[in-house]
Each structure stands twice: as structure tokens, then as C-alpha cells.
Image (cartoon, rainbow, N blue to C red):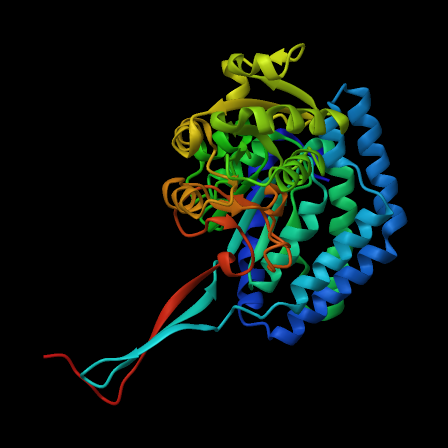
Length: 426
């Protein structure tokens, strides 16, 4: 364990991890689809076979988190149960069932001089994934990177270290069973922050891209220090706008689900915007529906007439990702007011509009610049599995290369193959 060596050795050991990952990446890049799928199915089987060990490790992580006074929302993301283990295994099998993107021809065309040019998907190479409390990310990231022909270096948070290592043991077993190098999926065996710094520096050129998955402070550090490209997964400050044209029963069901189905995920709604022209119709029913499910509602000053006795929201509420059973609610002046508020406060992750007016929906889709926009559906569908991607490493909120759920296709690059018949250029 790297935790048992001197801090001065972190650099040397991390660079060795990078070298081994680069060597494994070459083997994965040319691995047949059948071999990769065999490894994935073996991983899923090993996850299920090792479920007792994984759950025991997770219980230790959860107990330590509670002793350290970690919030309930954080523990909700950390805690696993038998159903969670089964879901991890099924997620890996779903990735195995996806088409292999490597070698796929994205486009092909002929030139007047007789050259044929094709653009073909290739692996990115070595991916570094830095994440916090979710132990399932260990399996999701490892499986997705493998399917896309990439080696991966995983650095989980200290609070989920035992769980991540137990899951990683099962992933290695799957690789070995399929005859693939175990270095294809490596986990950083230390909680020393210096290891993160080494990854952000690129491990002597051996990391091709970094994927951070965590809170604002983690992503800010990665974006500030990284010397390699970053797929930024920023916080999920997600909004729902209820237009005056919305159906009340639909709005009630969607709002409650978007906030309360799972409060600790990045796709949970954090701000509810209600068309001022329909405040009488929507405000009280939606607030009461949320409160009936145990949600604390904070309202802007204009809503006091509809929500007396509730906490009043202040400026910080519009910029807070609660990840808890709390939501801020505000009246806005129609679709224009919703667009203005979202443009000012959104993290560009996911936004939803509930409306029957097609012009309102068109403006929402055309004028809001977030990675995922939904009409008459819960923000909790912001998930790679729900998009048919099997799973995801995260939701990329930037605009370069990958945006939205980062699945197998987003974990690829491409190269041009040019075929001729003896052409020379004059």
C-alpha cells in the first residue's frame, strides 16, 4: 500500500502507475470486442461473488463517515446495499451489451483525385478519473474505459477508499480471467493529496485526459492545476421551470420526483421557478406536495403570500447545490424570466421545462445553454444509463469534445485513414 511508504515516494510510485497504464493501454487498443466483453461479464460476476466483502468494506466507510460528522446527503451517496451491488453488476453487463465504438467509421468520403478518406474512432489512451464519495464510480469508470479501449487510473475519495478497493479487486479478477492486463484498471492506493497533484501533472505524459467527478472545490482544483485536457463535471445546480401552460398534476409529479427521488445525485432539482402569471394555480400545490415528501422549501420574498411560515431564500440559495431534501422556489416573469434566472445561476448541467405551450418549449430549448434540457420530464433522467449508454463517468458541463453524459463514445477520439491508388501531389 502506498499509504505505507514515505511521502517522498509518492511521485515515483505514481509515475510507475502511469507507465504501467500506458503499456496496458496499447493492449486494450487492439483487444477484440469479444475479449473486452468477456472481461466485463467476468467483472460483473466477480462483483456479485464478492458482494459480502464489498458490503463489509462499505459498512466500515459509512461508520467512519458518521463518526466524522459527514452529512446525511453525503452518506446517502456513499452507502451500498445488496440492491446497489446488483445494480453495479447489471450496469457492467449493460456496458458489455453496447456496441464497441473502436474502429467504427464515423464518416467516409471520396475526393476528386481518387483518394478515399474515412474518420474512425480510436481510444483516448489513458484516462485519469478523480472522484469523491460514490463507490459505484469505481465500477462504472473502469468498465466504460475498458469498453472504449482505454486504460484508467482511478483516484477515489478517502471516505470511500475501502469500498473502492474492494470493488477494484473484483474488476482485476475480471481482467485476469479474460487475459487482459490487470494494469488496465488501476486504483491509486493512497489518500495523499500529492497523488492527485501528480495525476493533474500528467504522470510524465502518461495521462491523456482527466475526468473529475465531485464537488465544486474538487473540480475547481482540477481545472486550475491540470496540465492535460479535462472533461469537467461541475456541480448539478439544476432548475425546473413551470410555465402557466403546464398541467398541474404533471407538474406536481415531475417536481416531486426531480427533487425527492434521490436528493444526493447531481441531477436532483435544486431550484423551482414558477410562472408569476400562474402563481395562484401552482405555488401552493407544488410547495405542499414537496413538503408532504419531507422537503424543506425556501421561497423568495415575492412568494410569501403563497408560502407563509416558510424560510425565505437569500442570494446564496440560488447558487447552492443542496444535495439534500431542500429546494429554493421563485416566481419569474414567464419564460423570459426563467431564461434570465437560469442563465445567471445555472451550472449548465440540467434544466427542465413543464409546459404545453410549444413556443415556450422552443425558446427554452433554443435559448438555454446547458448540457441537458428536458421537456415535461424529471431532471433525474440526466443519467448515462437512462440515455441508453449503459452507464457514465459523469455529466460533462463544458463544451469541448464531450458534453452531457460521458459514456463509451465520449471516451474515444478518432483518426483519419486515407486510401489511395498511387496518387502524388503536384
